[in-house]
Image (cartoon, rainbow, N blue to C red; front, side, top):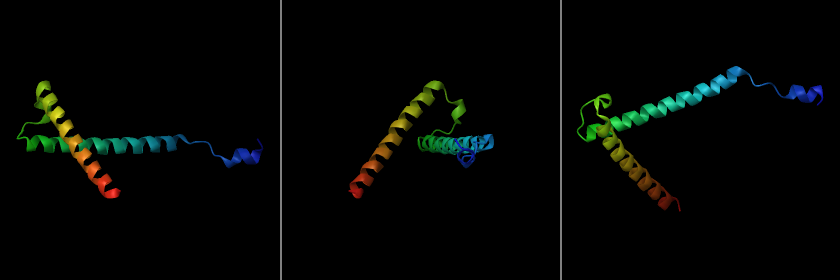
Length: 87
């Protein structure tokens, strides 16, 4: 490689890697907070007033299972509606 070709590409700076990692972590944190808030909203809808961290593992498992099925059904219905109108 000539020096012109070598100079064309700069080396990847570690601060750029840190920036990318930071943005990914920030997005994951936002998504996690959104999902936890959505689950809390589901618990309130079900009449559960206790904080999530005091639920027994069995209770939490029951609620999470129902939440997961309900959320998937809603997303699936939305996807079908969108694809129906998109065609």
